[in-house]
Image: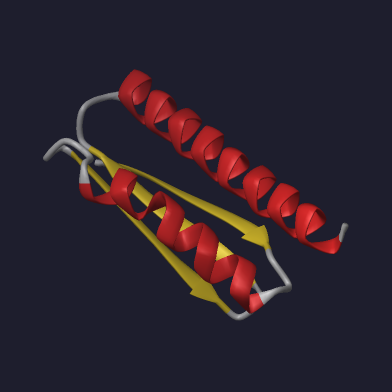
Length: 85
């Protein structure tokens, strides 16, 4: 079993909660050999990934997770900017 921990700083608790909720479907729909758990820890959002299917699957899973987090974050920033105008 291979494990990866991804941690990124989010100083805004509301943004952290929104990010976690936005990627929750990915966490729940992972195949049985892949486990993803994302949580807030102090000022960070942390994703724990466990994979029992090989390095390629782990890399693809982490890549997909990062793309989803990036898209969610960019959406939150765009909405916030739109609200301010």
